[in-house]
Length: 339
Image (cartoon, rainbow, N blue to C red):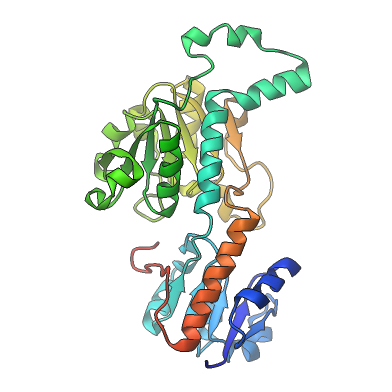
């Protein structure tokens, strides 16, 4: 196999470096140079065939041999910045995704749906910090004050890619009725994934009205920006729940806050935020104090498991092997479509 040069553009841990040595092809020379100054990287970039991690337009311009940019997650949004996408397309540089986190995110989603409907974190906080057994709320169980069971309830998956499919498999085991929104609903294997009803983004409101739980697992693109606005929340079933494991740009923050404040939504779980694009990331991630409600907030960690990282590095290794052999890549992103 031809020797290839690979730049790892982020700072891997020692454990990750050990996995790279065992999972990536032996004919790959790895570079771990780190600098904010492109001039310090030019000599190395001049011979690089692949980059693992984020790139900039300046990096691509300085890498005449570059053939592959490999993301470690599911999205390719970082390559869609003005000028960079056009350059990648013009040069014929492939952008691949590792897609490693579907199982972890699906398990996280199930956890959130159960915790939200059973008010697990609210009960924990009151009992642990205030010795309050919350008898008053429990006494209102017949008024649905504590929510219900996943069994027999309806789940709406907004997006039906790798993550949506893994969520459906697990939700089916809980006895949920499952609906899915997709670009091509007719292509969904309904029997395999237990899908009872489908829709497209164009007829989303009636779909939302059917769901007790709505999970956003659709790519963040211009077509999905501000997808969950006031009109969408108004269309949701009273007392339903929202889980966002996709991108913060999908939600109009004020609209979600108002839906929680009014009681339209009984709860929400957020693992992503509009502020995720800010660097450095710090501070309270949402524009409104939503934690006062039945809300679970996590710092973009739903897919952050050891197993997911191993799968990511395995997929990168497969594509690097294919690169050295001149073979076609797997898990390619679509720069034109944006995902």
